[in-house]
Length: 377
Image (cartoon, rainbow, N blue to C red; front, side, top):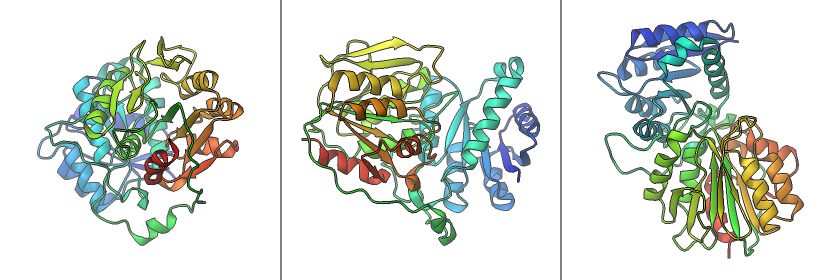
């Protein structure tokens, strides 16, 4: 059955181009278009699409407001289009916090110059988020709200990003029943970890926010964060987390020193490694690697530098990045946790950990923060 898509944008050119690109895929059907947020809500209610593509700046009602209303009235996976700028990142993070699942850069030049690349990327995104847990009840617990602003932190990338957001309305019983059951892991054992390493992708911005806001300022271990995200967005994302969390959060720079109560976010487009002296190394992104930053790279360096003293966590995301790094961590005696399926936006990266029998524990998103506090001494 074809994936039904509603295209929302106030630009007639962009609506047509997106509709043409999607319609060229026989497994995708564009069921309608809308020119503003108000029309988007009406069309979402009447057409019941599987996925909505959404612009931010529109007359009558902007995209973020529309996403909030849609998540309350008819939760539907939303793919946001955003600009690859610091302000675009802020706006995109707000959209993710409102409930959008993922994002893509809105680049008119790419659409005209690289139509095949754009078609492949857009259609893959639509298919992936159509299978997300956006309609399930796993996100009924709201993420901490950001400080009000005309446009808040956002994140964006030509590859990944997205995350659940608060829901005002409880999901229907049918949706709740659809959420997969999970085995519950016992509470963690306490250990003097020298490093906590968290890797994530699609759904990660909100997932990280929900985990890190549960940590006290006195959290005893250094933290490194690897979120698949473009270079233009990681600084804005780190700034957002720093404002919301009790711990400090910053975009990592070469030579940064790991210390308790500080989370260092890998910069987009580059690779982050740690050494045994507690120093961070930032390296150029290798074109041979799909992900920049790559969870496997950071996890692998942590395994080499800290042996059995690493607590690693793999959160929601597409693909299997983190699995081989987690394998190295396990071989050295370190601990690996995975987010459970029901609370993931996309159960890809954690599933790869679980299927490879690398997970020491499987926890829901809302359990991970409190268990990090319990585990680290």
